[in-house]
Image (cartoon, rainbow, N blue to C red; front, side):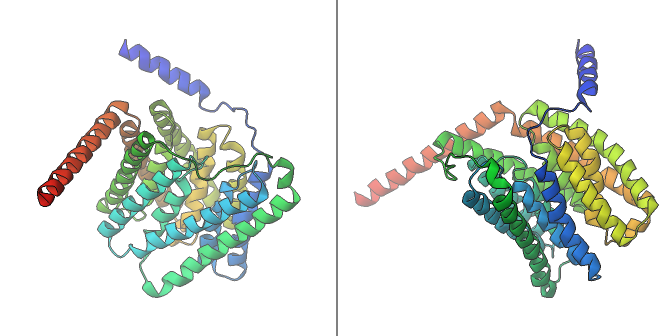
Length: 375
């Protein structure tokens, strides 16, 4: 019976693996994403500073948090808040990169806070993913106190350009899609939900910290690939969705690395890589809401280009692709396990009950102590 169940499940998933779903996403968003990431990158290439261009390009991904159906003032407030989040993510990651244990702990605590805020405000996709991605990548950069302000400045410039682009878009085009309904950014959250959000955030933060630590202990060149893959898997909205994403990510990664190998083999000229990044970003945003597995193919190639374009290893595609595949598979497995804990209702209920019991005992002890002191 179990064998038939898994066979049927595999057949069902294989049929839907590359099936396109209907999406109401505007075509403007892929174009905006391509410009927000591509123009800073081309600027860095033009001034012969590709590393700076890549940092500004990474910051330009904040454009993906641009809402499409709220009034322009609230839209820009959202962009500014997310831009600050990107800057904070980068600053936290790079500030603790001097020691891999301190980096893993700081990263886990930061992800816990980001995930809790994400759940509290019920943010739409991509949620906390890119904040985690920025913090993960910066936590593995070489620690040099003197260059931190400069590198953070490139992130600031990238977010500023993305916000400027978002403002121009909102004034010229986006106002046609504004909702007349006022959106309240802060909403009351029941105590029960607050506790549940806190538990979920701790689970995500713990597995992010563990995934980064595993990468360092295994002495991978770029261990941030593991938490990035882990975070992508744990973004699933249910246990089934988590494992579905894990399978889709591994399958899409395998094909995506093949695509990446082909692209790198054609040329490793900086301008060629910049153009590839822009085109891949556009394709990803076209497919991400239609089919995750197809999007992962191009996400894999894009992230390799973003992370390795200025790295000498880009000239040896065989070694690069092998290393990235191992990283992503390990991260996907850890993310699948983390997703099981995250969506296991019984475990969360037991944790909630334990926290409530401990809280009541502490309150009773405090009251007893106060009575004794007063008596």
